[in-house]
Figure: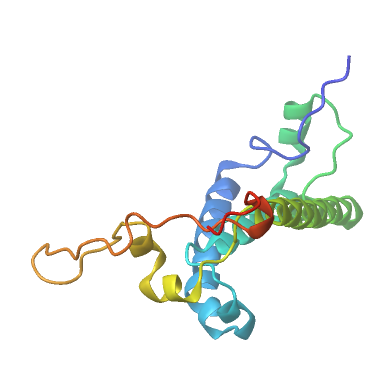
Length: 187
């Protein structure tokens, strides 16, 4: 029986490489979110207040590519109990045979492209289904108030000494698309 495993998961890089990967996977997404996001015209048009793209896409891509860079041959052999896996690019360069490392980086890039396409397609499909039931975007007047106030919540009380404004729309009725309504209703 063949056991299927993820090709590069933890355990295939040295501790120093894992620490470097952690530092890079923490600092580069922070830099893209805090600096590049503000300078990019494209990112200025995207409503990503939580930095989901930077936290998941940038950090995930870095983790995959850096695993392909730092994968050590002896750890691969110990982890997989076989020598059929290509070493990371760094160790290929040190061994003087760059081809296996380039092949591994190619596999990592191919995996990243596949995951990106899969996520775009799956997320688009889910959003299309949800948009048939409810609106994905709030109305302009609700956006002016703010989504936390519309839901009756406050993220931060930045005025006064703990003074809070009353919720603006606690009992707001949901807006149901016309094709979901019963015939003859006007909600």
